[in-house]
Length: 500
Image (cartoon, rainbow, N blue to C red; front, side, top):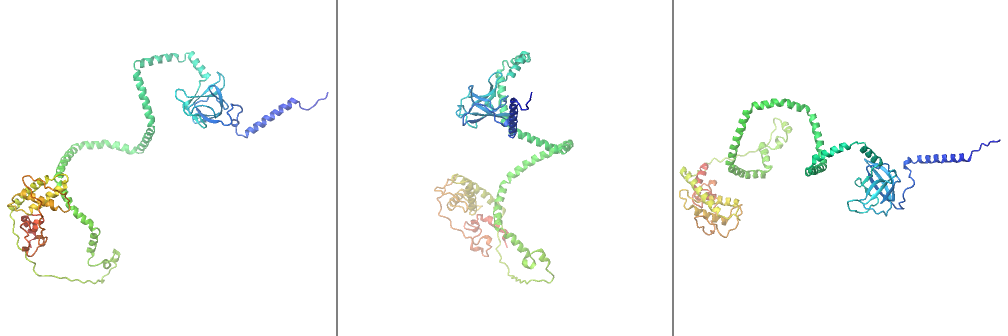
């Protein structure tokens, strides 16, 4: 019998199948991973489907190409299952004409106890539907879930049948009933407050984190200053002991400071007017110094080098050091000396002290009468500053034209001076216009006078005129002393010092 070495037909078919499988594996290996190869099958979604992402906390054994159902009708399929952080991102394809609201719910269910998993989509329960589910929409974790597994149900049933926790549950229920019996409102209030507290904690989470970080930095700084803190704590008992030994002196010092503060307050209150007047008097001096600007320091520089200029003594210390013995500068000086005797001024009469006392008393009466007259001026339109200026002007005008020995009717003179001042005005102090003079207690005011003659400014006591007879310097309302607001008798006292 002859034998043939040709292969059998069945063997050739098996070899071809193996070669085909190997070729497919090689081709798949070039794609990177078997899991990247699209699986066949799945529900038809049409030519223009929409893509929707669903977030699940647990996808169980859901795999790509699993079906997606709406009301137990297959409408789409799962294309991918990926891990995003701590949850799963399931991508599904749906026909574009699928009618689902934008707030639809998604669940993972089983076709039967041992059947395959699928994604079930449904409208929301307990809330109205809104919008329409579209391409690229995401169903979040708040609207997704899954049904319990058969293994979980059987495990729970086994635990229950084996008495795993039934006895404990009975005890727990009884204790809870005893604890909350009759206190349901209090328990509900505690839970509500706990809910509010947790909400506030969540709202202030960023502030709490910042506080913890700041506390951490403080702890680090305290650790770095550990040596200094220990040293301060070691020295603190000695310091406290020293303070305790000086307690009596400290108490005495504090009492003295208390008395000093009282004295200081009284001194400040008593000197308030004088201090304000001094500052006001100092204001013109400061203004003139400010107006002088750089002229004052420049004049002092010239004074130190007069009559030599900088070019002669050197513009700087080095030039001055280069000057040598024998150097000279041309200087012409001319002095005119008049040796004639100065004019002899007439002797001024002495004023006895009773006259001064009388003038002081009269001035007080004039000031009081002026205060009553000014008080009659209406506050609007007159201001306090204007009233004070008018009162001061009245006292000057009346004291300049009164005889301290025979003052006469002081209220009438005050009223006349007030009328004149309201007519003439006060330089630098604008006064409102009055059509009617105010009333002065006890005096009938005259009509506005036609005006007093302007007094001469020459021949005053400060001009030291050789012939004082040309102008009555000391007496009468037309005297120069009266014009500047002083009593004639007081002017004699002021001029005693200029007697030649």
